Image (cartoon, rainbow, N blue to C red; front, side):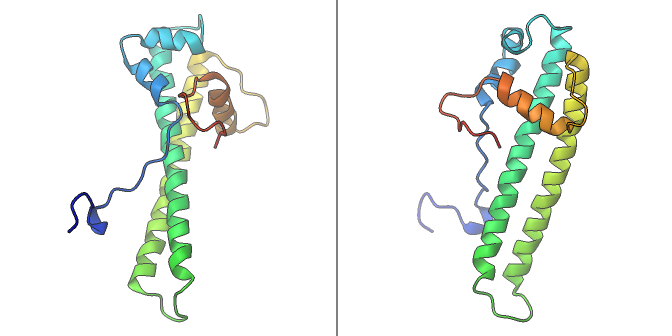
Length: 158
């Protein structure tokens, strides 16, 4: 084996970039209340709001990772299926389909956790969610508008 290269079976899957990593680290650190004050000045119990915002950002990170994994699995499957012979699929194609199904399930679960964390956060922060707007869509836009992004992070929200 070439030094510095992992065996394909133990290669780690790449992780999706998380544009709020620095802010999340600030929330977890000793100056968490100061970081919270930049986003939600003068709102309710700072400890409970910090915990709710951290749970929300964890859920957002999970949704970004799940979307990234789903795209990665679909691209890999598409690449190999293009050259597959008709008939019974190879073991590799079956494995890639299982990987894609697992990624889709993780995406669904992460979206559910985002909705749950968003409901807890808006309740704790006293934020009004407009009628006829899905809470997950609202909270993603709220995070993009209010939580500071890391410098050099992708400017397009996902």
